[in-house]
Picture 1 (cartoon, helix red, strand yellow):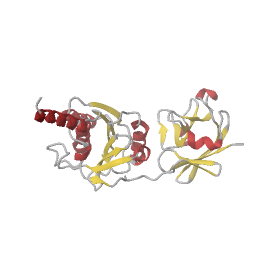
Picture 2 (cartoon, rainbow, N blue to C red):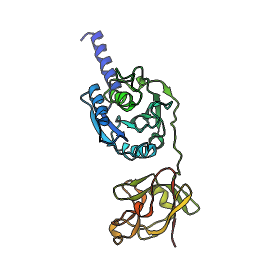
Picture 3 (spheres, rainbow, N blue to C red):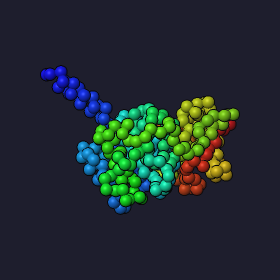
Picture 4 (cartoon, helix red, strand yellow):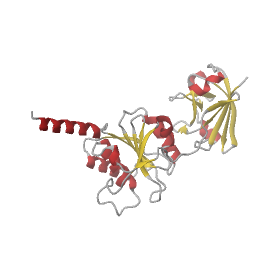
Length: 299
């Protein structure tokens, strides 16, 4: 092979490697599945590349609930391969001055979304490698410039698909931004003065269990063993909503039917429940950045 031809082959191989991604696109919205919005997004993505593997994270985020969108990304993203592109569209500010961005995390994942707080938790847990603002003059569905209210289809699905399929490299998304995201304030999990403080980021919605952000590591200073009892206080905006003493159990079967318990959920975070019951519904509890919890070891 002539040197010139060899160089061309090497260039093309390197170019393909630089542009390659996982070919995996994961979608999250608050659209639901009652109409054609999600299908339209998938159609745009397939139009970019029929070889894309497209998956749903969820389309049942409560309308406009940016915090829950942030949590669901953090809950699932680490289980997806490096190079996976997530498109998250919970966008009550569509048409406003909020930025449309792509976050590249230090873990090698990509998040295509409005920068409205959705990136709060993945930026913390996975780290910020780089942020770019989507340049809509280059990365927008052709023929959609007159549409102002469906950026999920016209901007985010289109850009996410192009990135996932390797049509564009990350550098071609748009202008580099400072390495920071719009952040929703919440109570981080900490141990202080024999008390563990935390947030209730989400409910196990199918069963009404109350999940916290208090990790196994944060609980360690309490020296808990299964069978110990915890004093639990739950607040909404500083107002006490629940107080009780719960056994720390390995499984739901460790307590009688109808009894309260504290346990570690599938993410190894402290959680509370009623065995064969719905704790959130029974005590009118919910989740979000304004919901906090205090836990001490009962005598």
